[in-house]
Length: 264
Image: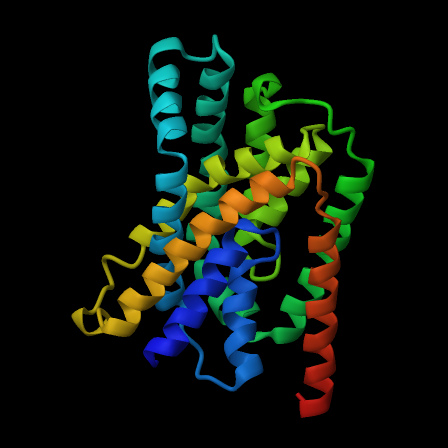
């Protein structure tokens, strides 16, 4: 993999991790579209280190506040409820990811058609949640059980095409959260799961993988991820998620058309 390819994939990871469009799907589809060799699961997980850096830097005050409130006040405050909800809501994703890793690698990561179908299907569900969800509740009104439900949705994100942020934001909207609150809880709930994904590469890390391309990809993911978080939260003060639902449908259609053209 060249440095340029790594930077491109790092930017893709940073953009798609926090937008509800599926980073895992894009890290498979972009090399496939461009005729590059697949980056591989290990490199994809390494790029999560970049997005972990981004979300940690952006939300470091929130993360410290969550830890302090959760440990000292339990669920007696809104922040404490969110903190314990994140702890409990992370469990389904961790378990599902551990149990399904081999299945996902063998089945879903090898099928462009299944990725395209899931992109379109989850995009349609996101569209419905954005249009029909009441969007009245702020982050201060969230309950522990709400975050657990959102965490259950996050567990499905191990499957390429579903999208971690897409699943969590959709679930949050369905539970009545405002658009900006849905995004913020998605980002915060994603911090421990992204950390876990990055740590997965450590036991199997080969020193030869730490090349200039590796570090360029991680840096690109960190910079683009930070920028996307800031821009999305600002955009959602007035904008909707419908543009992302539409984008998912367009990418899905393009992938299917390309499959047919290539006879695959």
